Length: 174
Image: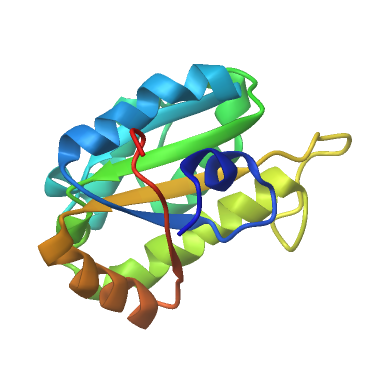
């Protein structure tokens, strides 16, 4: 199991972490982020059962600009420009509460979400086809998925089938 601080701040770990606990445990992560100079937002898996709902929840949480086009290309653009509208930070974190509900009405779209999160991680590290802006300082981009102990096995299996890896992370109080 990886220490939460190490997971959030180390630039070379996998993009997605699994926090086994209750939604309140996921919310507690946000209280630690200012100490780590990390900007984070919590989104609700129960409000993101479809791709359009993912766009709505992320747009609200990150306060996407008025021109957000509510499609995958526009989503990519906004996630690569986080520093322009949520502020520069040493890293960025998305916490998904009740993650087993994420894209549950469109399960085939989970592979898009997994790939997109990896793409943003590469962008913010300044590597891969995602690149990064010239002179960009590499910084971590992470996603922490919260699930109860009863849900965590199925979530891990779904994430794996979608092409991703979940790194177990410690609870904020551990």
